[in-house]
Amino acid sequence: MGVQFDLASITDKLADMEGDEDVPKIKLGDASCAAPFTSKLSHVAAITHIIRQGRCTLVATIQMYKILALNCLITAYSLSVQYLDGIKFGDYQVTITGMLMSVCFLCISRAKPVEKLSRERPLGNIFNLYVLLSVLLQFALHIASLVYITNLSHIYEAPGPIDLEAKFEPSLLNTAIYLLGLSQQVSTFTINFQGRPFREGIRENTTLWWLQIVVMEDSFKLRLTLTMIIDFAGCWVIEVICKYLFADLEPKPMVTRGRERREARRRLEEAEKAKNLENAAHANGDSKIKVQ
Image 1 (cartoon, rainbow, N blue to C red):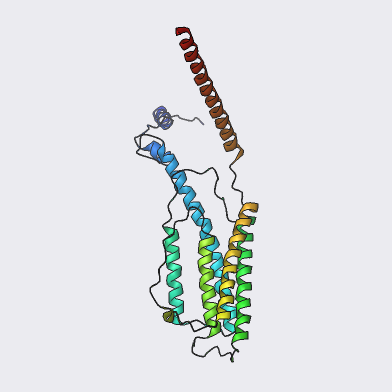
Image 2 (image 1 turned 180 degrees about the vertical axis):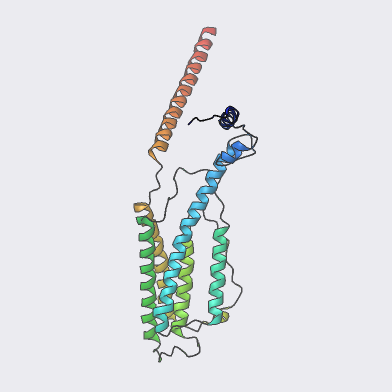
């Protein structure tokens, strides 16, 4: 049984295959689509701008994770353990706390990158010993401060019966925990802020009575203030020590080798420049002697 070949159809298919193998024409804009980023500038300054913005974003992301973690842990303790102990907060207190938190977040979001690139590199991820240990130790210190002030307020003012459904009434315990909580919120933002300080001053125009604060004895105010200071200073010390011991901020060996070569080349150029100046000074001195 014979097989008939259609020479015309075979030729057309071969022509189509050859057409498919042609090199595609490059159009304007294809390089921009394939590039990681594009810039209209005629120099490479855009690269440093992108690195600065990227570092600023990375540092802001890590600090936000730390701040949110601490705030969530403190809030969870307040809404569970302290609520069962009869510690409540008034509407004005919660409103002022929320406003203060909003202002702090606004200040953080307005932070700008520095003009000069630093030799240190930011942390690449949040899952490292420095971040975890710093958050846990700061939270432990906050809890210890809250427990101490709670026990101290029970000494100065006898606790009443716990009624979870009762209407809120300001008390010494509520005032102390509220002030300490505000201090902890501010310390959380201040201590864990990464980078150059860029915070606007927070001014409060309302009086203390709007905060629903009761009158306290001098000895209790002194101990409360000392507890706030110790809590603030302790968290700062924890952050500094953990960052110094466990934060990997050193650049990669490739970067350090390049830095060392640049420093060596710079020292060599300075030595040659000093030698040339010295030779020029000697030559001028010899010429003056010959003239005399």
